[in-house]
Image 1 (cartoon, helix red, strand yellow):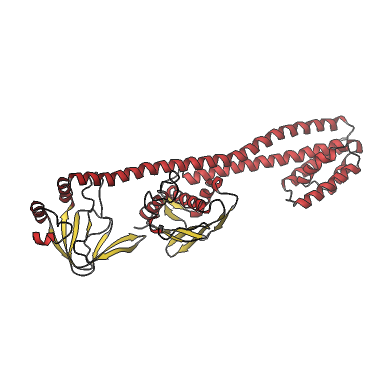
Image 2 (cartoon, rainbow, N blue to C red):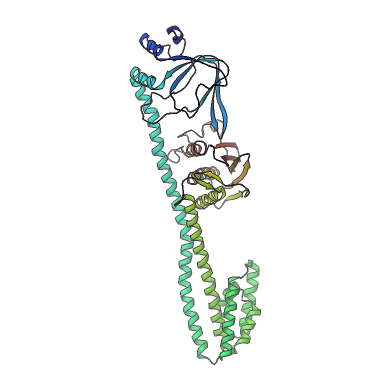
Length: 471
């Protein structure tokens, strides 16, 4: 049994009265350890509060499969283990680090299930304050974290709605125009039928119509100068054949957009009589325009489908929470969801290593990490700069780097950026939980790591994720 005098040499116990010292004497045990034995191990139930009496110890934490030393000390009275035994919540507690002796050591061990109640009895006001500190912070973190996720979801939803509105509106406009053009095509066909065009000529026109549809579907993209020259040539062709004033300007742009050049128009002129040429060209122009409008509708609907697919990929609806995933699909879906936040003056550079294997993880939560990092990067650049997303292999891990060309992170605040509630944003604009949540998702849930390098004009956050799950 340790003596009262020895206990009073320890700063933890120096102010205790005799009754409390006697309680410590009766309930504590002096234990000796030597390497490679461990005093306690991270992740195991926190059963003892440990105080160093003699020797030196190191505290370590496991990070993606490796033991990382946090600190080492030979200070008499240094403590660890069940340091939160006095907290009154009912959650199970485990050691949050490993204590390893660096040589022969003597430690004092107090059972957590007895030491916690004793502290609450001895120092009731202090315990209430500490309960409020730890439990209040935890509740605040939960509430604010949920609120932040809701705000982020609202922002993403607004951005997605904006992105969906553009192709949806385009499809509606194209559909309305298409209805008018189909009606015009029927009218022109009736005018052709009322003329003296023979069956052979009508058959040839139908063949040209089919050819026009194919040409419009595969029309090449012309540069502005090439488009102007082609339209001028078509206008000249139509004017040379004495078509009504204004006709050539109404139809030239559509004909050129559908790749109906002068050589193709010559085939039309050969197929019908001169008196039917205007009606035939108008009918074929309507055909080309309807095909172009249907292509626009198809493109718009495909865009909507792609956005909905990206939203499902981002939210991981109807999918298992834990699965093997391709990080590139997750990154792309996140970028699509954040499109509305990406300024036209921000250049997005994607440097993907597509040879990377799929990795096990929680994709919905990883998307939250990418969202936080990309959103912070965009905020740091203030609407102008280069956003770089890079993936590569780093040993037995996949490395995902989000870089920006903003002002950088000041060296004096860099050690605090992963702390909960720490933010450099103005009051009301940031909760300080984005990086804290990201850190817990990557480190605690995926057994990975987040590293940061920063200097003015170049800041990079690198997320390391194991390729294989830890046993």
